[in-house]
Every structure is written in C-alpha cells, then in structure tokens.
Image 1 (cartoon, rainbow, N blue to C red):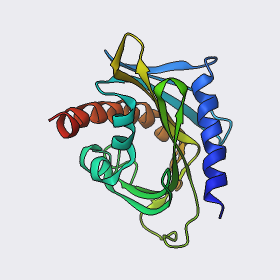
Image 2: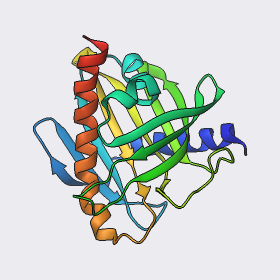
Image 3: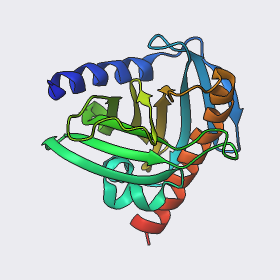
Image 4: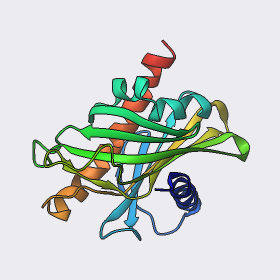
Length: 209
C-alpha cells in the first residue's frame, strides 16, 4: 500500500476543509470552543469542525497531538494509543482504542490510521489522517473496527498572540457496527469539545509544567 500517496491525498483534503468557510452550522459552543458541522462528502454522516485556542506554538502543539508519549497521557477518550510504524519522518501508522461513550451506548472502537505531518507558510502545522488496512493489525471481532474518513488538526499562530495557537479539529468517523446514526451524531460534538479541552489542559501539565 502506498502510504505516502495516501498521506498526500488526505493532506490536500484537510487543507481544503480548513479553507472552506461556507455551510457550517454551529452544533455546540462553550466559552472558548466552537463545534460546527456540515454534511460530509465522504460518507453518509457529518463532518465536524472544532476550534479552540491552545496556549503554545504550533510546532509544540502538533507533536503533542500525535506522539504516543504525549497522547496516551492526556486524551481521556482513548483506552490505548500507539505508533505501529514510521513510514518516514513525517508519516506514521497509528493504532488506537477508544473507551465506551454515552453511558455505554457506544462500545469501544479501534482505528488504524496513517498520519502525515505537513507544514505551510506562516507557521501553520497540520496532522492529516485517514484509516487504512494494515496487515500487521488485522480486523478482529472485538473491539469493533471503525473507519476515520479524512480527519486532522490544523494549528496556526494566533495573530494577536503568536505564542498561542488556533487549533482547528476535523473529524468524520464511521464507527461501524449497528449504531443508529442519530446516536453517533449526538455524541460527536461533545467528544470534540472534550478533545480540545483535554489537549489544552494536557499541554499545560505535560509541556509547560
């Protein structure tokens, strides 16, 4: 499987999502995090966009989002997280298992993704991910294997305070199994809020002491 080609394709999609300003509807908003959605072009569900401020620069924030030594410590939604293979210095295969959600309505899921790190002018750094087949981690009966359609984090310096970053999260997971779509869609906005909140607090604890 040409993981570098897959990484390039998904990076272009995440870039296009970050430049798309039309049609987003607010699903959930807190004091400093906003979650929006629109119908996905990838699967019969929605794509979600979460935006919040992180108190550090993009080059420090992005490794914190995908390296196992950080992610496994701060992300309360994940039961386990590991890097299975380094394709090149900016491309990785990762495996994660989630905890159950919604008081057990959504059982644990596992994902195997390719993750590619890309940098753009202006200090913007992004992760770009999509689920892939990986022979060394075949599908098993438990937990249910989900599929992440193009997803990622786009982190850019905050213009009014370059020491801080604007983190924009894109997710559009197909959780598999027999879950009603309504159950999944009702859970995802809160999950994105939790992700950004956990990242913010984790960076304060792990990176800034």
